[in-house]
Length: 531
Image 1 (cartoon, rainbow, N blue to C red):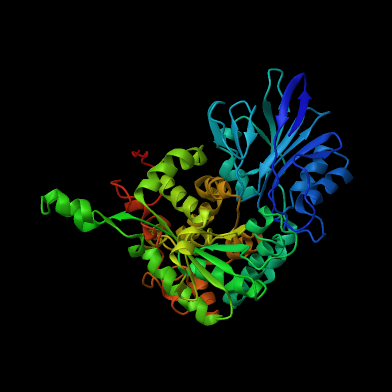
Image 2: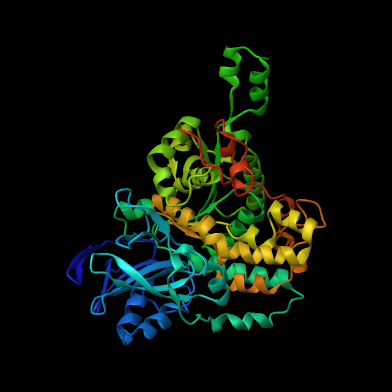
């Protein structure tokens, strides 16, 4: 914590150290001449041996401290981040999120509170748009007033210009990212090979700086390297997560386990619901058979299938399939005590609630453990908790490769150009719809989410490809959507996973059927009505 004063108003800066990187740790918040830095993120495009935070501190120390110099420093950064930089002498702050919004940053109306999480006792909060870098001046009564905004791109400027946060803010010059332009020269005739190469790099970047010990050994004071899991995969067993798991296998040392974490919920059986409406079963029978086991959830079945496929591809890898089972009672308790607060300021809709709960339980990483098809003893099964620092997730694949049903519907009604426009829109709103919420939920367990499909180079490359190179929506479900990624999966030997149709997390895990909630459809905006 750091105390500081601006214009006679006292402020406090709080920061914590996320201990996943091998290099020496930096204190948080970080002191820079005339400045205080709060940094939550990774810098993928630097090659120095120091930590990401120390790298930013050194760059800030070396620059002249002007607004232009600070904007030039943060503008080209590739990787997930949110930051706040306090300039004492200028009585100003600089803040922002990366161009996709992979890290959370929220604020109240007068910017007297700015951080990763909301404070329930300090007004109405909103997510800071992942639209660029903001500069704000201290006000006489406390808090800050946004003076200017440096958009990440022309697309960000056009999409976010009408957002309430930017209503009275002056937009400055658009930031450029020239280091990505060489991707335009890639051969469009080999998109599967190119995407495979880029995904390998993106997964490798996410795991290369993970600490030499797992969470458990670190907390016990172990200094040397351990042989426990340090990387996990949020694993539905579907196309996206199976590809990510196979690529992680190729990046990690052969003696390091990989935790494949699959979440499934106790859920209401459709047949019992009909019987109760018709009076077709007595109360005792309905009470006994009301809920089905998590093992019957569709994602549990695909996880077991893809786990076996991965095990056959590399039988020497220590594959850990973690089966996270969630009862209705535990769901209600966690919603009430944890997830409702983490969800804020995202709207508390049925869809947001379902996805947040599924992610929270998956990121917790607790459940039964299967290793090479053999379940451990009951005591080990019930108590296993993944010690991984980083969780790899397939978020972003559907948004870029036409994986959703709405993309197929748009194609049928309006054609391929309309789908391409919709995919571009998906990437602009992914921060507001998904990523801020997901970061708050996953990091609640002291883990970091890594999104290979949202690597800047991959997003840039896929944006250059016409729809015909990414999907063929004239084909059936399970074939045409994400066709490019299916080709990548086939090249990796994932023949079964390559043919799996898209199934949304809330349906595959059966969280949407855990209670008597209405049917969740698409981006459901209905306000949640639950305990």
